Image (cartoon, rainbow, N blue to C red; front, top):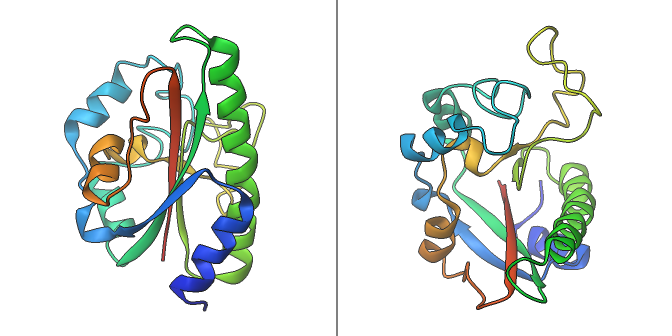
Length: 178
């Protein structure tokens, strides 16, 4: 098992824009965030093992993260031409996913007990097996921070990491707990 400093070095090496130490005592799982999931604006509610309700109840999520005491918040921040720059938003999301995938592989390789929460739904499979069959890759499946009922901007604020970098920017946030 590695140290916090080793974990921080690995995620820095992966290439995130920003990172901060995460005190797991600041993690709150809120029913209000889950209600946003139920609104299904992303189209994944009830269609993905990593999203509600497939990822479990808030109580099940709470039990999964309870053993962890520290972690690292990571972000990819992108500059946009304007607030409607869909291409810039998608480019930043793709850059975050690529960086996050690299970092996740490094963390799993170097830390036997890492718990990973990403940004957006799990996209390992082109089509998720939910709900008709078990997850094909449960050891690789990554739920989003929001799917666990965590209000991302508050988590960032509580751990000294900005969430809003000003007009015409977007930030994708994920975390590694260990």
